[in-house]
Image (tube, rainbow, N blue to C red; front, side, top):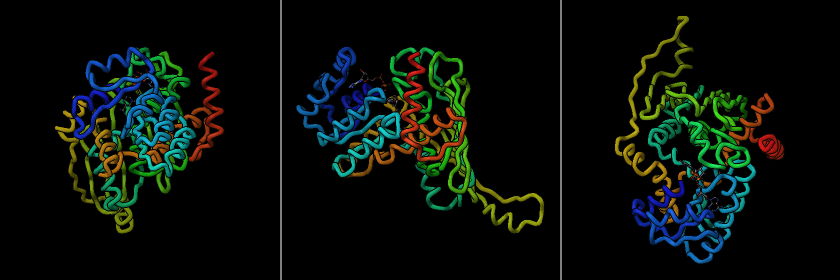
Length: 360
Ligand SMILES: NC(=O)c1ccc[n+]([C@@H]2O[C@H](COP(=O)([O-])OP(=O)(O)OC[C@H]3O[C@@H](n4cnc5c(N)ncnc54)[C@H](O)[C@@H]3O)[C@@H](O)[C@H]2O)c1
């Protein structure tokens, strides 16, 4: 991911931004950046880079456990920081970064690039406008981010408690959990089951969770082992429904269900409905295919540094999806419903146990 960000900047795809330096503790990975960023300085030591360069911003794209320490150093040097998701693999670590960022005057954000998806943005506006009425239920199924054994075999830190802090939830579906809470708010509790299906990994690649929100319930299903999977978010409201697929959103509007129920004399209720579609956007899709959706996250970071907007997600929001993920892991482990916010101490014990089991 770091090389994609670096390439996007070095090749001038981010107007007004210059790639000053690259840092990697692996000399081979660092040398590879010469190909597309010959003018950037190269460092193997973060402290030296931060001391020598007068940077306006740093993008952190390292394995998950390294994020917190690097972010805290950048904050200490007064450098604005964009952290790849997850900001860190435990709620406690994310809170630690947020505490350091608070009052530092430094802008710190998390690269939840799915928030730049125009369908989710339109959905958020619609829900906040109140036109659809109260939310009645939410269902998210995300099973089309297939990962083979070859994917898991390519990187030492991937798909392990020691290297990554979790499986498909921590790496892939954190995006969807962030979108879920961004649109409908935080659940009060989660009840979940996880599995590892058909892969030689120690972490989950299959999740089924139910969630209790204030006044409604929701279901979340995710996997990275199914072929012909789907990506569908459905939000049912009193006066309409949103059905968001990978490339279009269907907006259905109708009379209030409460009103229909109060006035109908029949055993069944009907209401005339009308609908329209919001597309993902052809040029956005092309840009995603060639440069990555992450370019829009960088644009928001640049604008925030220039005082012309906000990052896609401030670090203060980085914790929310992690609360759900850590809660799902605790629930799957205990077989019990887990209230959010989670107990950080319990989670630390759970993670240490999983790491020890994994080593064995
Ligand atoms: N937003 C997205 O859509 C998206 C997509 C893919 C990956 N990611 C995230 O990007 C991050 C990196 O993932 P990746 O797949 O590129 O990993 P990777 O293993 O391919 O690359 C990580 C690089 O970080 C270097 N590194 C490790 N520790 C370091 C340290 N302390 N200081 C400097 N460099 C260090 C490694 O040598 C390696 O070159 C992860 O957080 C991942 O979840 C985000």
